[in-house]
Image 1 (cartoon, rainbow, N blue to C red):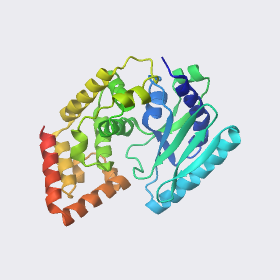
Image 2: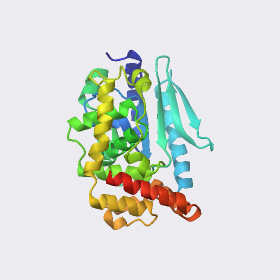
Image 3: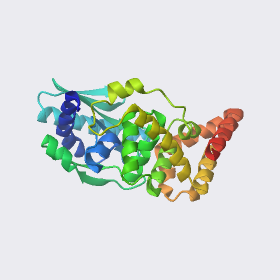
Length: 307
């Protein structure tokens, strides 16, 4: 049974999205893009997660993000008078998040300031028919390309192991599975994540029973038990390793060794992504300052890639 509080959040989200969509520097990613635009609403989604598209330097990007969020805030306040809109600063004072609250619901709009830019071109999409039919609202927005959208979802599912993410992965298995493009998107996300690659590709499994009960139950009418969650998680790890090619493994090891062979990846824009450059710089620092730890992590990655 769908939780009424989630329905209220979705209704607010659909009122807010048109004001976000006006900012062409942003594109929608995550569960809302997947479940409410790509698919016909297998579950509800209540967050607006955004990618900043230009390949700007950090200072320029942060300035543009803050200005765009200010404009979004102003538009929402004018259009939805009963909505309290608040800019939430990061620890460094930069504003990259907005909360929107009415009497019945609260949602957030958040920009990932590390994972900026996109390798694949995004596309404009209309809201799924099921969403329009259920909530009586029509919206359109730029959506991250499916390769990076689902590649990022797989990365999130392995990293935080949240039931919402594993539900989405379960649906992916039922709707075409992990394609070559999605694997490329996954590798892009692996090289953009702050977490070491070896920890991502064979993670320690977390007990997510409480998160399942409090942060997922009531979001979908599609049957998905905690046992399904555990089975999906195990299947995901097996599938990504089955999909890794010898070239993929060599490429990941070259990156981890701070000597990336970019010719092994089919999209050269990957090397210009700010998050990838940041991760590579950190690996270079580790290799220079603590070669023993770097060698240990490189060996761990090699072992986990072999299985």
